[in-house]
Amino acid sequence: MKQKISFLAFFIIIATVAFAQPQGKEDLQKKEADLKKEILELNASLERIQKNKKASVAQVAAVQQKIAAREALIGNINKQVKLLVEDIYKNELEIYRLKKELDTLKIKYAQSIVFAYKNRSNYQYLNFLFSATNFNDAIKRVTYLKSYRTLRETQVDNIVKTQSILQNKIGELSNSKKEQGVVLKAQQGHLQDLEQDKKQKAQVVKDLKGQEKEISAQIRKKELQRQQMKNAIAAIIKREIAEAERKAKLAREKEIADAKKLKEQQSKDGLIAKTTPSTATTTPTKPKVSEPVTGMTTAGSTSREYSKLESTDELKVISINFEKNRGNLPWPVGLGTVVIPFGPYDAGGKLKGYSDGIEIGLPMGTSVKSVADGKISYAGDVGGEMVVIVKHGKYFTTYSHLSEILVTKDQEIKAGSLLGKSGSGDDGQGTLLFMVTNDKNVNLNPKSWLKAR
Image (tube, rainbow, N blue to C red):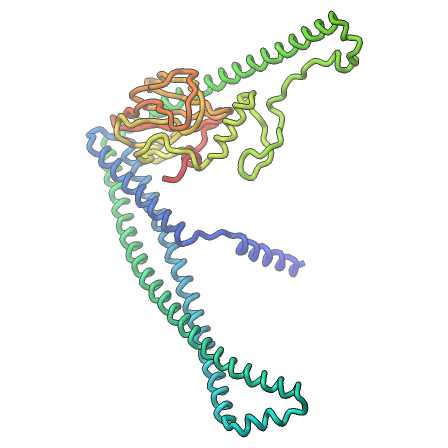
């Protein structure tokens, strides 16, 4: 039994190694560039926030985001160092193997040279040929001598090629060691920056400690706005479902009326006798929009359950396209960075907050665009904030803290359509709250839907 368990564990380890997809050097370098860009944008956001004398929840949240980005960057560099260490180790092994191979080739070549020297006499060469028992044997001996000469030439070529490969590997090893030195130096610099970021956070928290009442009031206001937004979205989803059911009911009633009218017309024309009882009495069945329907939709899935908000083929296509673009949707704004993440966040000390979306810090008046094709479900005020809510089949995206709305309810829009201009949050700083919600009023993490920047 123990042997079986050991074999199973060994198989799992082998399978894990075989099917794992480790990040390559180029992927890690791209990720490093993205994280550096994010840190620069967070620094810019912090500078804008700190110009305001008013205490801000976004200050601590932005520093937290920067620390998280810095730690991710250091982790990324650690992976690069690991790859370089592996490359160095592999190159050293390959250099050792090539040196051994080169030594073996040289020994074999030396042996063949010695043999050729000892048998250099033309008399011995002719004696070897004429001692053949027959003509065929003589031909074989000539072929053997030619092959032996070719072998010596091949040995020389192999030695030259092996020496060339060895020199290249030595060069690669040298470059890897130099690169490792550069990466380790960069890592040390980022570790020092991380310490500075932590000190900055401590200073921000200290500065805000004397203003806990104001910060607490901001969090309470944000929580009230969050609940108002949640209720507003719930009401919109309920209204959209009711409207979809109403349209589906009208469509069914129309189908029944049309069937009845056709039956009456057939009866008048004397065609009813030709119609079989089963077809004559059949009425259209009620469409089941919530039944599982087979068909490729999202990655890794071959079936899905359609929502009441997907009562038409067009709405199904919009939903499916939205799902297929998960992780690749464009950002609603062309600049700015996330200062308050989705979910719980630390506002300093005992002060905690929760966000149903992501808050993006950016200059006021920035153009805000739709991330996908859809229809405007709401455009107006929610809890004192100007908001646009776009319906994408069974999904909804929300754009809040706007200073100007440039669309109207029920307007059909495309991905990239201009919705309005960004405004400011309760701390007076330029911000945009972006949310993604499904038909069950469950808020989803927007960053998992948006493409990496």
